[in-house]
Image (cartoon, rainbow, N blue to C red; front, side, top):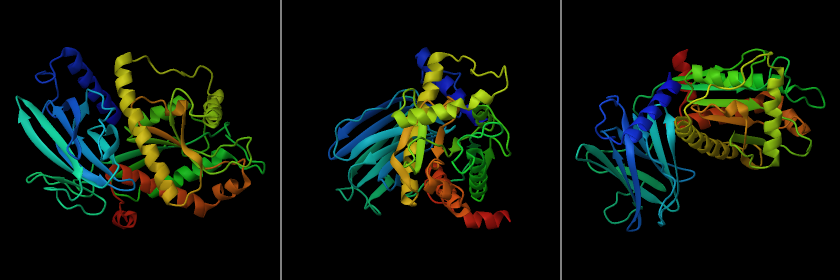
Length: 406
């Protein structure tokens, strides 16, 4: 199970750190590598980042656009050190990182200006060194870029400008139609029930996702039944989900407010609206059967913190990409569409989780869209394409995949 593998990977990293013998620990799995040092440094005209690993891993660099970024993937590797700060440099604005799947660690550098990235790999005293050099596009000795960003390797370690085309493992997405059963969720003035809108939209998103190759999409409920919040997250863990996506269409006292919002988990709400929406969604468990277990078992705190840190980083990164993709596909969004709050349904420590409010049933214009099959198909397709693009670095051909299945 992917969730268990992710947890096991972090356990291994933690034990290696505590033992102080990262490079020689015999208990490490043969196919698992730990990144023990990440050393960024400003270089002439750009940035150089040195990664030290306990063994050789498959490493790839590639370019992402809109916005321009350079990314590095480490297969079968987990980090045992933080990477949150960059030195002042003329090319890289910010860095994001996290486990994008149970066996792939990704670092993404957002660029200030067109640039190229070059990877080199060497061995030093039983450890593996990977260096990424980010320099000006078209600079001396740099390969000519294609478009605004290019990512390359030195001879013998070629990297693609698109995401690597190596055989992909199956992608598992768990879609959570909010509310259900006794819990109607929001109800519009005309009587439209959120639980019905959520289920129909989740089914549509599932069907679209499954037209892509090697994608499994599962629902936390496929009928009008009540599922407690913690049980929804548990379903995602049971399936070993790469992503948990909760679908909603809330109501609020501000009748003029309309548009979609993407939420991630945080201890403190980003604003009053996020706090109110989270309170509405968290109240769903008032319908839970008496005696339902509301609290997860206690986990070793430091281990849980390490796991959650990577999960939150991934969730934030995906949420930002989803907001950008929804906007590009002409889906109306509220002001500041990426927000955060303490949503209980997003609290799984090892499954990246995001909640999407498609619109507000308290707004008559949004209600018309939410009840319209064509609009729901539009936003579902936008979400599906964003998921595939995020995980696989490019737009898959859903039609060809569907023809293959048929």
